[in-house]
Image (cartoon, rainbow, N blue to C red):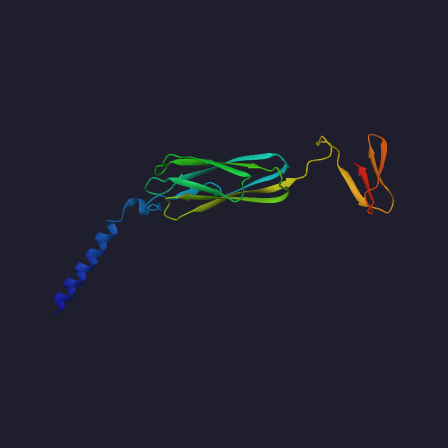
Amino acid sequence: MKKTLLLALSLTAAAYTAQAQATPPAAKAGTTAGPAITFEEVKYDFGSVVQGGTVDHTFKFKNTGTAPLVISNIGVSCGCTTPEWTKAPVMPGKTGTIAAHFNSTGKMGMQNKVLTIESNATAGSTTVSLVGEVKEASATANAAPQMAVTETTAATTVKDNGKKVKEKSGDAKMKAKIK
């Protein structure tokens, strides 16, 4: 009986040892079985840009898996952001890019533009983002002068190139100054 039990334990130990040795070397090295996408950076801070300006940034990624990686689509959080990406399959160990173009026209303040990458990666979809601030263009950069408007009880006075123009609008009266 002891011999049978000892034989069974020996065979079980040998089976586990053989299974551990059969694990593919890629799995031991920390790579993922199947395609996997790993970015150098997932967030790009562009600092600040004047309203109407654009930001272009290229996100670089590597296929850290064991099968070809294919990006099928990239969704954006806003129509102001346009992506372009590597369309060909990215082989294991190789790199690809996603170029993001952000147009700040009509935007103001802090921005966080998210790109959602849909691919055949085993982890599913992933995201990268452009963050920064859109600032108002200065008065000297604008072709038309900016006006400060305040309500007042007097007639509206607008100064334009040294001329004063008075205007009355219904019952409400306004005053404007060119800065």
